[in-house]
Length: 127
Image 1 (cartoon, one colour):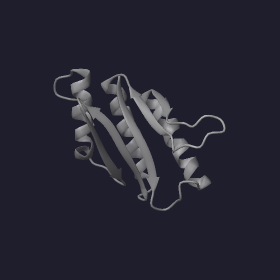
Image 2: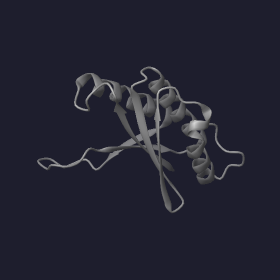
Image 3: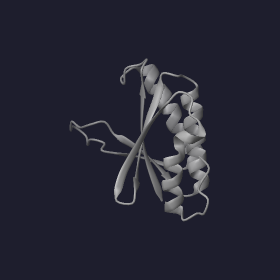
Image 4: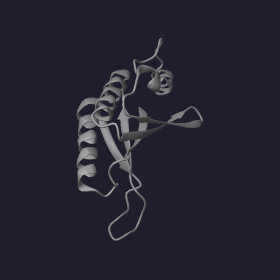
């Protein structure tokens, strides 16, 4: 399983704005439907204070990676003020990338390379 942490943000909306929350819920729904499992990490328990939960997309195949990248591109393309910080493990290293607005194929190359290595594919996954 290749795991990709996603942190959506906006230059237009505050994190607690209901309009922004609706947009993020839409992104998570698209990712869940198209790419596979989602889970939240760092969620505080009942009555506890805590940080913001990180959402993890669980990608079981290179096809799921392609679907996730397509969903992210579509979501980002709808509003140029949107951005997403993506974080993943590449061997012993933790890597991250922030994408905003209209993303091209080259933008996701690092993720595709890491996922391809994880899945053991020759030639890489399409990003």
